[in-house]
Image 1 (spheres, rainbow, N blue to C red):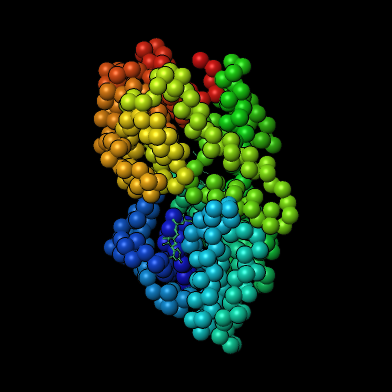
Image 2: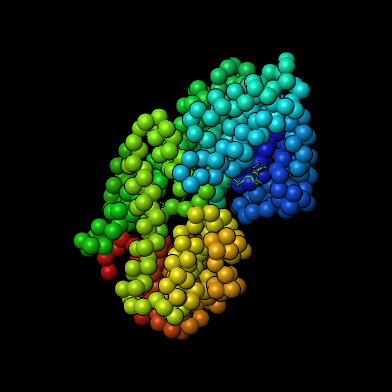
Length: 438
Ligand code: UDX
Ligand code: UDX
């Protein structure tokens, strides 16, 4: 089948590559000319495991095409996937302006039947607005369909998640759109849930918010463990043995970042409020999450006393390993707070340093205030303390003796409990994990 995709971000590009791998022919459009030029030249605009190879093989197989032309991408296929960003507004609601303007453009330009598919995470009820927009601006005689097909791609494993999904959710109002989407996913033998559109839209927000709640819950338990002399890893293992709870997403630490959990929990709270419901439980989840960086800062102050003038090393800048995405990354908030307290910061990430530099500029910081280094050891030179902010496997391979010699004072605050089994106390370090009493 032919598929059009609007939005060449983490979701749009991976979705395109996945459809290409399934044998479909895909055209992807984005307003960002640089991004499209990179893709046309066979270069991924962001790091995602396996994507570079898939991009090149899909291009040589003639399966994916990239354009900045809205008219080309509208013309290309009957199925049009909306993969544009739905970032949070100040009041927590999702900014749907891109979705709205694209729906209007499609209505005005389409000369044949189109099925608009929400891939971007949108609040329940959005499809009704899309339908109204298509009716208001649509040309006479052109038929439009709307569907919801939310993405469940975990960054760092996105292409594999697309090709081996835990479930495919298809929200439709009519058999025509249902048949189109079932045909599109025919070769994927994962559970296919066909339901109404509002239910499909709600599944995504409810799913991400629940996972976020699970993380904030174990982080609360971690803080209690430190005070009563328990080990949060064993508590997590112990409760996770109950199949009703499960062991995943119970890793205590710096909490969640990324472009999904923070924005989806806020959007869910806002959407519930617009229909008169109090989802303040999820506001607490978000508050607990944001306070995780303060846990790290208080550990640093408890061992270094004043942070002013102290050299602090941050290893890990991406919001999680195996991605270069720094959106809502806890590391950036730690760096901001350290700079505000007059500390001197060195930072290293295997993939995300460039994006982190740009993000710190967007936060109003002078990037020259942060020493972005070429490797971990350079970042540790003359350092008073090391903070592990992202659990990249490379950091677990660092040589403790070499680190000990490089650092001014051998202090490690491990925001992801990555080095917990390295017995660093016996190597002369002061080692501070999360949720494990010393
Ligand atoms: C985003 C959200 O983060 C995710 O929650 C949602 O499910 C899908 O949209 P992501 O791919 O990470 O996913 O977004 P982003 O990386 O911001 O990419 C969005 C792309 O859409 C950008 O490349 C942007 O240039 C493009 N865009 C946005 C358009 O082409 N036209 C527009 O009008 C707006
Ligand atoms: C998430 C959902 O998992 C995915 O299904 C959805 O489609 C998009 O949002 P993503 O945001 O890419 O995926 O990353 P994920 O692996 O879910 O981790 C999100 C954040 O939670 C990361 O910052 C990670 O460090 C943190 N996390 C995860 C924890 O702090 N503890 C855990 O146990 C798991």
